Length: 210
Image (cartoon, rainbow, N blue to C red; front, side, top):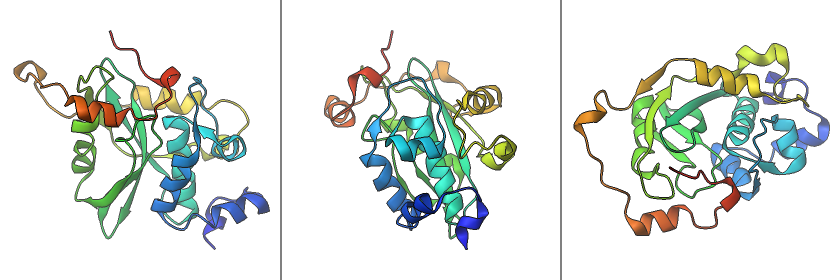
């Protein structure tokens, strides 16, 4: 069965995970979690127990559940300037890319699997990725990282901090979304879109731009 791909879940956890039958269900679960404004990096087991996560913890949780469903546990780091980075869990369906994500904003969450390439998927976030002043901030992205590389450290169930995964994301090469930023002057995001983006956001968890 699918849960045997990640041995270590308790019976109670498996009962809960079996309710998350699709990436859409995973996204709905993440949306119901409270947003964690702390600088922690806790495991999927901890997220389930505390019912709280920020984007990095949400991506780790989503990747773990995607693996439970039979997908590889893949995450992608979206790197920004004058803003927080964002981490998404990615998956493929019928050869196309989609994403699941926890966010303190309304616009950086789920993406349907309709994108032909990882770059197409990442660029679907570009217009929606801005700080509280409306400055469009996405600059680069990593290739998918398979979290199986950290299985020897039991990242899915660990009680200690998973900062080492964040450090790895910071250190690996990133692909720029645009080669020459000096030639482009971006318009700020529409004020109505900015208001919609931060609707219901937990203020303590928002990046304070310069």
